[in-house]
Image (cartoon, rainbow, N blue to C red; front, side, top):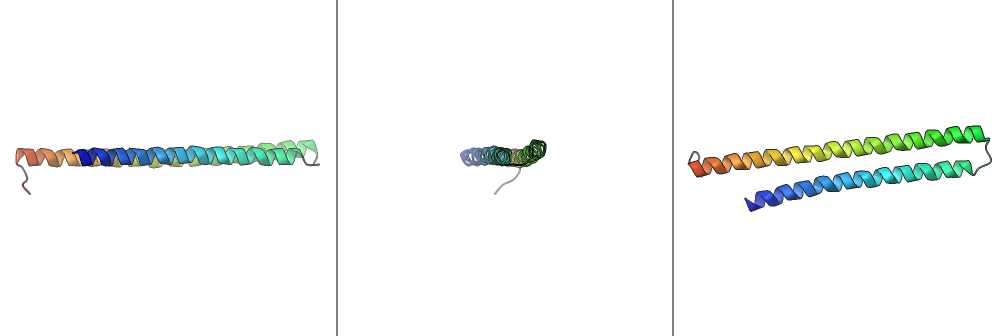
Length: 104
């Protein structure tokens, strides 16, 4: 039983790592977008073009960050579902062993 709890805790920790990684990656993407926008703003291009390009870069970075975060949330949710299914199977097996329904 303790091994099962340890397995579940390890799975949950892995899910949290995935989410944290996604958050970190999203922040990196946004930072790079902002840096690129600042670089463009400091260039000698006409302001209208610069602002439009900056907005496009930030928009793309935001979309990419959201996609990465959503994908990571889906992975974490799947890991949690898998852990729950494992717990249910372990509980069923333990119950069958205790009740003598299945002997090993």
